[in-house]
Image 1: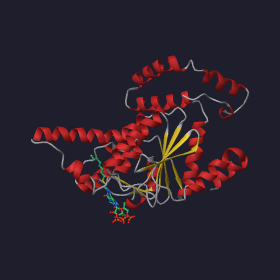
Image 2 (image 1 turned 180 degrees about the horizontal axis):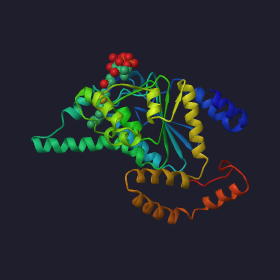
Image 3 (image 1 turned 135 degrees about the vertical axis):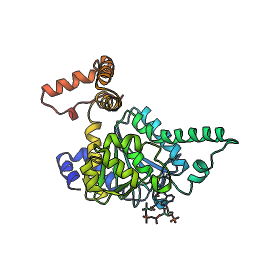
Image 4 (image 1 turned 90 degrees about the vertical axis):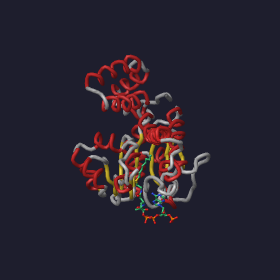
Length: 308
Ligand SMILES: CCC/C=C/C=C/C(=O)SCCNC(=O)CCNC(=O)[C@H](O)C(C)(C)COP(=O)(O)OP(=O)(O)OC[C@H]1O[C@@H](n2cnc3c(N)ncnc32)[C@H](O)[C@@H]1OP(=O)(O)O
């Protein structure tokens, strides 16, 4: 709360709605229709908060969740008001991963009357499940994820597709899949090695399913900040989101897209993609506006940028 209080004192008018929002977050609220596993809110006009919302089941990812995430992030990608997304979990923990009760019907009993057709169907299901987290990466708006308590199995798949990871001191992370007899198949094995520098640590975590606690998560680079509790973490997430939302959406979203492209390509390919990207995006009015503000020693936050 110290963080937000000092920001609040600097600009009381701007921060009042956010402060009220953080207070309201501790109140009871259900999923947002038409979703049954997600609660969607708007702490400010430009920030969308997506909360995993099955607290009584520790936000375990049931069949509805896997498709709702795709619908939710597809809508967010198209929403010109939204500039930044925050993802968090309701209740005691961030998420317990895949819903082990719900999993049997879909993943363990795929339809098909012979091995080829059953396998083909399973491949389709796995690809569909992969899309649940790939949509986060494909969404041009930066996504900040705030983890408290446990982040198990599918939770690690989810957070590695996000752009900025924060956690509380009590958080722990577990690539749990080997414990339930499977090789993680919806993103962790592909993205975690790009997030954490040490291949050895990634291998250790994925092959043994041991828990990684917040201090190690910070030291390894999985998260960039650790907060004492959930309230201060959400205040930190909102402050960070506010910083990004105040800047040119052309610049911010172009930066996300190019960082992801460059992660998956050579430097030469990344530079070529960047040049092609900016041959149109550099023509934005936002460059002139931002440059003028810089000349006048104003913060980018004092500039009004149009929706994108
Ligand atoms: C193609 C598919 C790709 C996806 C692959 C994904 C794989 C994975 O995610 S592997 C990981 C699977 N998850 C687990 O093994 C975690 C199991 N849960 C736990 O270990 C504990 O619940 C946890 C440490 C997370 C929290 O413990 P806590 O004491 O706080 O809660 P509990 O009393 O255990 O649970 C409360 C109720 O939630 C239900 N629940 C918890 N986890 C799951 C889950 N993964 N699936 C379904 N339901 C879950 C639990 O049954 C309790 O329900 P109830 O008895 O009705 O109160």
